[in-house]
Length: 500
Length: 95
Image 1 (cartoon, rainbow over the protein chains, first blue to last red):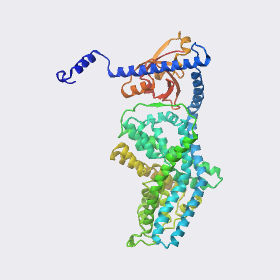
Image 2 (cartoon, each protein chain N blue to C red):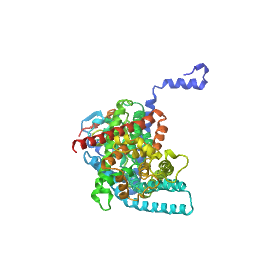
Image 3 (tube, rainbow over the protein chains, first blue to last red):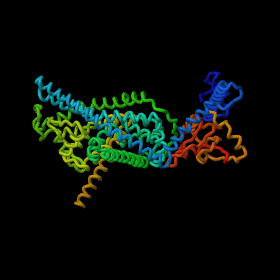
Image 4 (cartoon, one colour):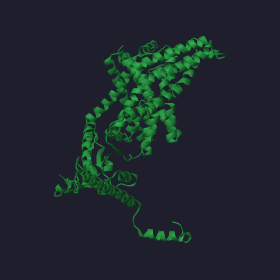
């Protein structure tokens, strides 16, 4: 307090008055909130009585019809909640919902993907013809059509259909009010991992986009638990990685998505579901690790509202999922895919020994891409993959969507990217380059667990304001991915050696 | 908002009154908040959600894994972990 001599008279008077009061800040707040609630209740009561009186024409306070209809709706709500949060059924229902979501995406995306691929690559051929007719130099045609256009077409064909199915379905669940129930069901696991129950909400958001998931971590008040949620968000496969996972699972575990192969689709769904569960398990383990080491502290408070279920509004869902999510993610991917495609084309067509002029078609051998890939080959093989895939992951840092296209471009370098319009031809390219189910498994695991994409890293930096945490968010998942892939590949080699 | 003040209170008048903390109230029984032994942000959050002195609270369901419990308070459903619920003193009539 200031010296009374220098204070204006009214402040001295106020201070004297205030010292006579014995309440502290907490009491004032309690009193204010309590009064607010009592007053609100009085108003609500008065209203419902007035409504009842008006409806029945009587003056005696009758049970309010508003209340009884609320009770009816609540029983519908709570019966659904009884099922969705029941000890066993609640957890099974969660798996079931997730499984159906993946299955619909996987099955539904296959045909439109092929159609879109055929269309876009056909357009690419037309573009090539146009370039030839205009006598454009080979390098220009290669850079623009074979590099930029084709990776763009690949990303659109592979990503648009699954996103256009997954995002509306996911938004439907969100709109319905299911996500808080998931947090309610799983909180105990997160509490035991030293993390916050709302981390399951930020993880759900991560299914759409990890950058969005990282921003969603703002709902967690405690800085410690928020950091845990931010660093581990990448273990949830985002929509940029889902197409890769779904394509590889269909090809190598689901009988390559032949039309009508229901059993194959179910097997592929099971593989994707298992990967997602593995991601959740890793999230909990790494959260536990962080909470036990660098982010030690007492668990913070957990207050979660379970709002009533709402009938979803189809129009709003479509607008939100198509415009806010699908097109947003697709635009971002496309903006990165085009320049990355150009870069990869250059890398695949400029040979180290002949850097003077850009050749129209360096024939395999020592192009920049093949040199980089062969440098990374030993590490790639150690991780159950190969040098080209690892190059794809590194060059795919700006966006996970382009990892597979880059890898393919590496395989089919010298500008002759095969027209990969369906899963069958994709399988052909991969198998021709020595892929087995083990390779696919390791690539999927690496994709699931590796460093977050550039956008997510930037978001993490913006959200934490710390280079240290951003670096940890990149290095820790990479270390996990390297360890897991090395173990899987090494284990498989051991088994093969033991049982030849 | 007005559900606490309706019928059941009168018929249970003769039952023994139990004073305990919210985490120990059996599912489905109506309890009344008697004191809050929580401080700071959590206290404010709970007050804002309606856990004010005298408010009626009913535990409605438990998570499949046992810990957070959902409570009906002021017409909303709010889930609290056991540690938080233990900071809310309540009284209820045993049935």
